Image (cartoon, rainbow, N blue to C red; front, side, top):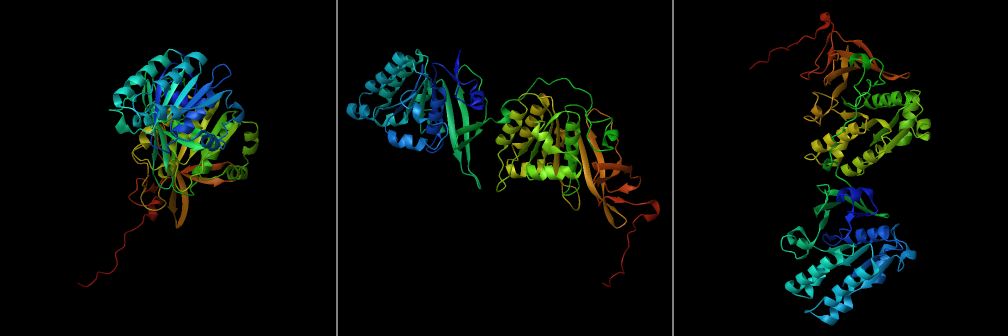
Length: 494
């Protein structure tokens, strides 16, 4: 069984390997969802001098208008028109034969498939054929078309403005080997496009609705990360140093290799600086690292790291450090795009440390609360399967009781560390506490921590008299003879 590539590795992955040669695939979706652009893009990617692509139009756009609309896409090649990609108009055949016979149309497509052996045939749109012949005639004609073209080895794409409600009764769908549904969902502030494989005979396509964008490069599809869950995990190496002075000793000698670690804390407490320390330690050990940020730009991160003596620019120039700045425009983040960035960065297995800053911002901007637990689990699995260790931050409230916006998801992480503010003799300091380590010994005490110009976030001495850690009051450091008293004012008269 051989496959025709769509020209997009991620789309081939979603389809289960590409488009099986000799198959018939319906590409369905309302107007404006990207059917024509996707089909044209596949034509230009698949066509060769030996096996061309043929694009048939019925009564949709005139060819001149169709070509003009394609000129803005980078995949369009004027020199390939005619020689590699041929356009054929079938409208005259439909007008001449009326509502009783579309055999000339079928014969034209079959003849082209058998005699010229193209790699790809596209009919845009087959749904329009319903306006010219009865259902019985159309069923017979499409059966003849699909069965005869299948023997040629060409891929036949049937485009149409079908909705999901057309699938149970539509003549085209039982005959098709594959069904690809495109969608366009209105969602403020940015609409979303999606692609879903409803059917693909003989392959194992990825389930779910996958994000689809239409850009100047054409259609780009981002696989839904929950659709594939790695099962093979590499063996663990020695413990990984956190890069935060004093923390490894609290964690039994460091972080177990391949673990997912989350650092909780309010704004300004030092979470990002802790990230930079974890990153700097990996670079110092010669490891390749990936840093994903939503707020700080590449220049801002390099400037921040430079204050602590870490040269991230040099690491980037020698390709030891990859910084992915994913701006969150208008509080909208596409989780599939982010997953694609991380997955492709991990593709060659050279990345050993992955840092995401921050998780709470990512969840808030994505606005997909129901999906987020499964997404996060899949993300952790993808990173671990690549042999990397994951370090992420998550924002908590600055004042009052700790209310983590990701409460209920901390069980997904192997290690949970919190860095919080501490009241001490009318001053505000910081403390660090290792809340959880899975299958590993760790210190449960609260320790003071500071931000130093030399070393970034540094763990200090143990706080012997700190209280309020579990949230019923603000964390305080109180000596025995300084225990706060509850004072009552004068009783009010009734």
